[in-house]
Image (cartoon, rainbow, N blue to C red):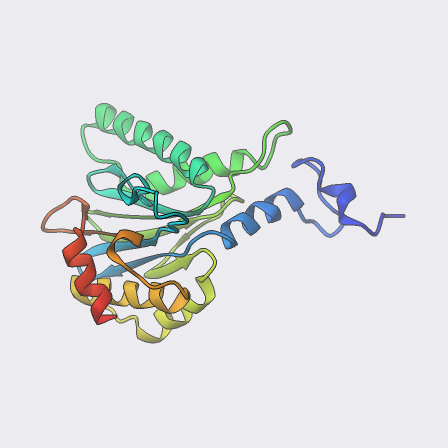
Length: 238
């Protein structure tokens, strides 16, 4: 007879419960749900990533709390959950991007890179002695086929989106994205929509030092982080 308590099945990542659940993966997903909200939106010729930074003390220096990470000129990632975990994943993704460039003489596609990261995350759901990554990523990029946005979660699942959010305000943000997202938006429209979704999903007052905004277009071919003055303009409009 199976024990009624799930504690018998959450002591190791390799043990399934009778109803087919991996509790350690579910616990990792809870870490993601407790994280600050981040939003990604694709538009006609690019992608925007917007991330909320939780500044818990006036003594913190916001410049050292970046939530958007450049992987290569044409690909970036943001995340919710344990930020130490995402730094490790980003470092491995950067190595993979450079290896691909040196081997084939061209940039890796955002899809291939997102699959590589999700495969790494999935690997840590199979073996004892290690825990799953307690983080979910939104990876945005651009290639010859246009803009792309992917989500990778602690189970290693990979999803492609036109617009998405992860973190504590995921449901509220995605409700707004579903209502207001339109194909062929301009970059300014996409940034404003992402900031509006972020603003609606949190009770915190948005200020430039607590929000990171990065955007890539086919014209520039590389991600650019908006400065505080431009960030404030979009916050004021949202």
